[in-house]
Image (cartoon, rainbow, N blue to C red; front, side, top):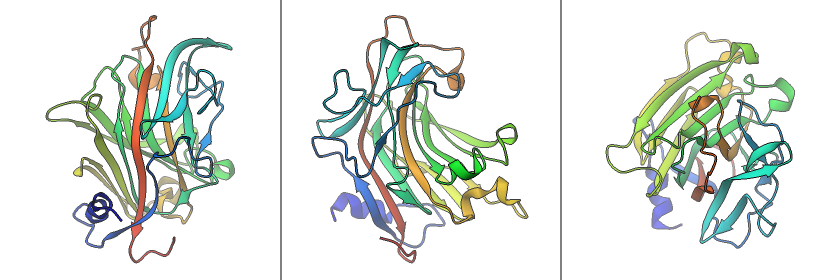
Length: 269
């Protein structure tokens, strides 16, 4: 294990007195996206009033929207007339391939800096096909707004049905620099009764399980695993009414690595 990984294992908030053990990682060092870990999602009609067509064009495909290049995962959004959409981009996930129950989830990334860009690194309950959203639970590790390159946020979504979605969120702004020209580390530590958010190992949000809460309003301790998602959306309600310019140049979400850790006392690989 490298010094970098050892440092990450020791990272954590006030309640993280027990060490973290590496469970899985993707360093994106190979020539192609690892298909044993990642699915490339084909989604013509995304949610949230987004404008893009999520294609499944990956490494080696003409006009690929997701590929590995120079040791980093690249998700590229571009202005492109494609079917009934005016933009294309990509969304990948580990559903059915790499699913996790509790742990520290981190990614070192650079975010796009253009109006209308909505990059995200997040977790979704693997039981979504059975119970639906938001009953499955959603943990947004980081979401960005391209027009605000020093700004990000982290959030939770839960509730018995879409109309009952309960959101808890917090913002984080860099004291200096930006998320576009520099690499930054985004992380969540998910435990049954508490979830913590970090940027560059600075804790900026803690959400505790409420007392006497109904299971639908805290699906994060119900014993079902979550999977990892990375995507770059275009437009959408998150930063409405801002939309990208008509002459949009290709925009990239860059990911140096994704790593998942578990507690030393937790069973697992």
